Length: 326
Image 1: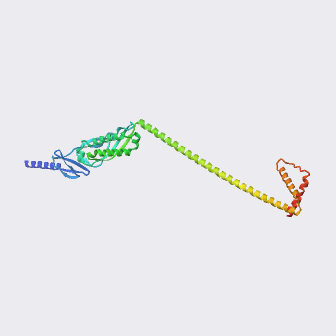
Image 2: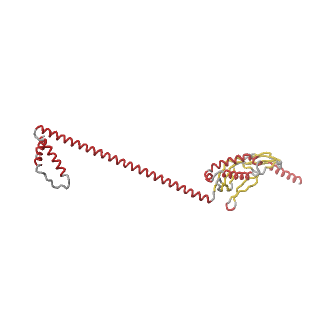
Image 3: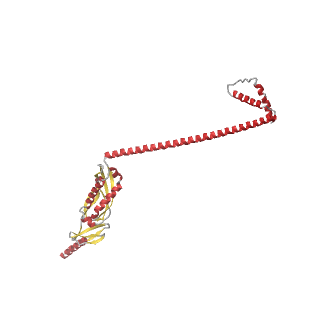
């Protein structure tokens, strides 16, 4: 009976020893093994064997985000023997930073990093999450301290790039690769926000005034161009009207001249034939022109003709008979 008890104890001890010596590591995880207090190896994903009670996994620290009462989240640093090789993100709480123009601003950042060398991550730094957090905070203060508030608000990409380069260079000896840094929130003081809103409103009003002025300017330009074109058209129309009027008057003068020339030719022919006295004809024409001027007014109602004019006017009949015969 004692033999069976001893055998059972031995079998139990063997099971414990074997289970302690067999380590199954999940994918994207690893463990740092120490043998008698010294670094021995880094376990790869899959089935691994170690010497029980001689080889032990190294304990490290990591950050975990846990949910608390009321749906609130808080970050807790815990000790673990598992090293996660996946990309991790640290959401750091807001911190006070001072810009170059002495404005205190609250900024919180997101840090994306990945452990590339587990041995360095364990032995080169005591508490890796705490070291990364402090390094990020100090680097953020230095970068923001070189910029004014307006540059801080409008240059997030530049700040992210600078922080990523600084942190990646500093954490390289810890076996950590910083892939990306993102500024999540930038919150200036309330007084500064009010002043910025007023400034923004003033800028919008200024732009509105500029647009209105530009619109009025274009309107005046278009109106003046329209008036100019209208005046040009009116002048062109007046010019054409005057040209046509002048051409009409010229044609009338030409026709009158032709008529007078024709009349003179007929009178000349009559004089040659001895039928008409030229002096009598000219005197009669002058009397007719004078009578026309005397009777052209609207107020002239009665015209008295001298007796001596009757002898002159009597020659009109002979002239008319001359033209009729012609």
